[in-house]
Image (cartoon, rainbow, N blue to C red; front, side, top):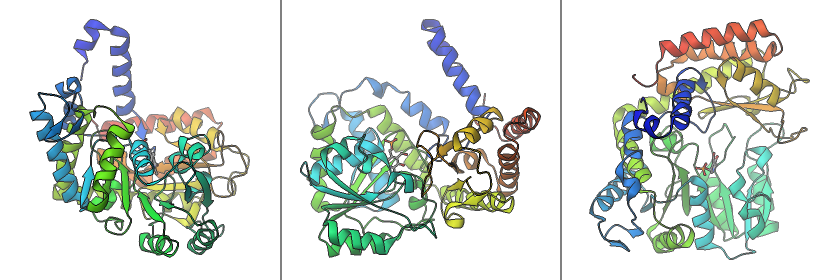
Amino acid sequence: MDYDSVRAVDPAVADALGGERDRQEETLAMIASENHVSEAVLEAQGSVLTNKYAEGYPGARYYAGCAHADEVEELAIERATELWGAEHVNVQPHSGTQANQAVYFAMLEPGDKILSLELNHGGHLSHGHPANFTGQTYTVEQYEVDAETGRIDYDGLAELAESFDPDIIVSGYSAYPRAVDWERIQAVADDVDAYHLADIAHITGLVAAGVHPSPVGVADFVTGSTHKTIRAGRGGIVMCDAEYADDIDKAVFPGGQGGPLMHNVAGKAVGFKEALDPSFEEYAQAVVDNAETLGETLADHGLSLVSGGTDTHLVLVDLRESHPDLTGGEAEDALAAANIVLNANTVPGETRSPFNPSGIRAGTAGLTTRGFDEAAMEEVGDLIYRVVDAHDDDSTIEAVGDRVLELCAEYPLYAE
Ligand SMILES: Cc1ncc(COP(=O)(O)O)c(C=O)c1O
């Protein structure tokens, strides 16, 4: 990955690409939505399929010359079907957000009602936030997590559903560390005759590996990102029962997109093949075990975890109890200076602004890909605590940063 061809044309971009490669090699990527794909996935995404227009679907394209595009898309669909077990899969959405957009576009009319989790409580912009097209196109009501337990308030959700009478209930979250009870939400949706969209963007890999319960076969629609815990090419996916297949396909193309990004579809196919290998189950289990270890380590140091722990790949720390004067943004900056990259995050009952909230969110998918085990994760937890607790002490930040560099060298990412 020397980017020689890029350098010959455009040294500035080659420098940026090389800088980014080095940054990823020399920092701990703990943003919960990120992961490190394999060189095989990188190669597929950087392939000549970027040149190909393939509007339509395998066997029914609007352009000639799609034989290889068809092969690749069919493989991606076959493998996704094997991984998640849905009756119908569409692998063309350019992103998780566009996968959600396809479901709304297929099933709702403007003004229809979405019931979804509040952003501060772990929801996602594409579930009805006013700044997103969903918030401006549909009528949105939001449920919350229980203030005491930090877990979805399923009873509150049922009550709201009763009074609001939604057309669709959205489950699946961005910053929710606990397993989701899909059946319970489906029962609420059934009671009020609403569709149920389960957005498993973050936990696609955990669900595929069976280390998190699956909403496939429970919810009407399941969407996801393909580059997070599933570690495949960048983009999105929609899954549904056969009865909705045509509606969903039409909503993806031509409803919301033009030509599919076939190089990314190739990256999805390759990543899905990797995820079908039995070693992926071990990986996904290690992601969850590592998150548990990380959470326990931080809690042992006195940090407060939303919901008290995790069942997934992420932990959400509410800094207000242990460090009332430290904002999530300040913690994020101090950690970044120590080569630990995670993000400031809102927490349930947020009292600060979304731009500088009270929490930090950390995920273990990327480090687990590098081979970090529970002992290494415990050390990472210790390092995070040291920085949080001494966030304005330059010598601590420097010492932690140096130790992170050693860890990165011990667990290299891409071969030179
Ligand atoms: C729950 C949820 N849905 C959708 C998305 C959007 O995914 P993408 O960035 O692929 O559009 C995210 C992103 O993290 C997410 O957390």
